[in-house]
Amino acid sequence: MTAMDWLVILPVLVLSGWALTVLLVDLWIPAKYKFITPLLTVLGLVVTLGLSLSKFGNPQSAFNGMVVVDGFAIFLDFIFLVSGLGAVALAYRYLRRMGIERCEYYSLLMFSISGMMLMTYANDLIMVFLALELLSIPLYVLAGFVRMEVRSEEAALKYFLLGAFSSGFVLYGIGLIFGATSHTELPAVAAAVGKSSANLPMFIVGAALLLVGFGFKQAAVPFHMWSPDVYQGAPSSVTAFMSIGAKAAGFAALMRVFVAAFPSLSADMSWVLWALSALTMIAGNVIAIAQTNIKRLLAYSSIAQTGYLLMAFVPYGNNQVLGDTVAAMLFYLLAYMLTTLGAWAVIIAVEKNGGEGLELKDYAGLGRRHPLLGAAMTIFMVSLIGVPPTLGFWGKFYLFRTALEGGFVWLALIGLLTSLVSAYYYLRVVVIMYMQAGEPETADDLWLRLVALTCAAAVVLLAFMPGSVLSLAVRAVLQIL
Amino acid sequence: MMMPLAYYVGLSAIMFVLGIIGVLVRRNALVVFMSLELMFNAANLLFVAFSAYFQLLTGQIFVFFVMTVAAAEVAVGLALMVEIFRTKHSIDLDQMSEMKG
Image 1: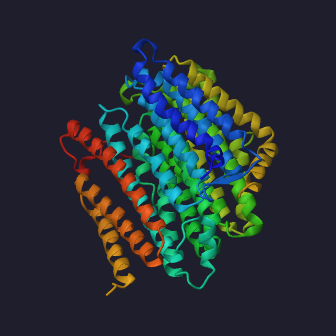
Image 2: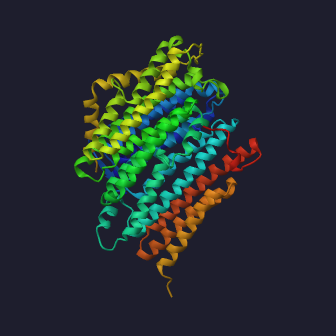
Image 3: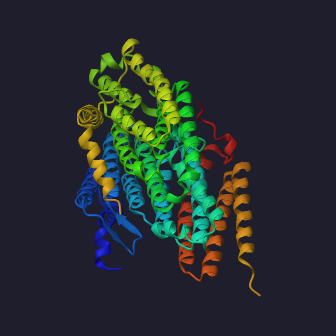
């Protein structure tokens, strides 16, 4: 352990240290000046973002290879930190409006983000487990942040029990992999599998248990049961962050562990991933049709998005496609982050105290009453369907392309058909906003509008230069250590 | 006489499966929580057994991390249960049905 090691993981150190500092400093901030805490949080996140981005193009490993900070990790860090900044902007006035303005929110948010960043750095199964817990435990608390509201408590308890359940699977899977190969470092695990001393059946069971655990975090069907209830019960600003961060972290772990440690399993795994992806796309999109609550609608929509992401991951063992697979998934996660963050900003603007204003019918007339918010929401819905000219279109385009390159034509076909199904429920939101009469009140909140409009602009403008965004993702992939 | 490795692995597998069954079948949140701890400790047993077998320290050190993490989870989980008991006067999971769809 040298000073160099600490420098490599500096972004995470700064962020977790800052989270502790903010937790303490907040005690001395008088009630009148509570706006300082979110300000400090933003400062910490921006500094971390700068530190993290400064490492782009210079992949390093530290602590005897337990962590690696490479382009892949930094690309995902960018997603986590920007969604964290978004979550602060969404929460600032919302928490006060809902009467739950307590400053632990911001510290917990930073702890969770540092766990997510650590997950992208992890190059050892021990680190994967620790990062998974560091990102999950603050989220359990955040989901139950509205203490007096039964729904929020229920959401937190469900999330906690099922989250711990999935951690149990991950942990036992790691135990079996350790037993089969006598290693926990990902490259050493991959190397040990080739040798005759490795216990292959035990190894395969271990890898399958890890897949189950990560599937819970990503909300892949059939491990998705928690997500609609948790998304609905948790405060909306937390749901926004959770639907981006926890999912992206689940995919970060899946990509890192499976690509680095289990390349030899790809033949056995591809049909499992195929079935998971097909099930997730079908169930997510079909159940979403029946939803009338916008938060549940987006929960099922996010399940469906998991299915599309998994679709691109199916051919991960094919070395010719692997680079495209990871790049396409990074691109899609970025597009998903911008789209979802903006959509949640609109939802929070329409939401009223006590869980009111969350039904689809509450959106009647939004398009005419608040043209900017209506237009932004339309852009997000169109992007989630995957129709040009939006970033979501290019994201799906690249995902489908990798699935086809890998030779999974049927899976791509299922993806295409379910996308058509999804158009129905996304466009229903747009129809209700513009065609039905209503006078919806929205919260007078500058920050929500800022987030919604920035995201809408980014989703549209970046769609005119998908090549440069993709080339960034490709550069990130090329730096994988 | 040394006990063969398979005994430890078998015991830990039984503990793990019992834990899963407990989580799926029991309706009291506390008992579910205990079943979760059983799953975690099944994994711990696996780590200790393998690290003794391979003469490696990795597994034993991992167990310390797992115990720390489990303690943190207990803190959060019990706090959530106390809080929910205050509002609902029950921690029966079948009654956690405010949300549907």
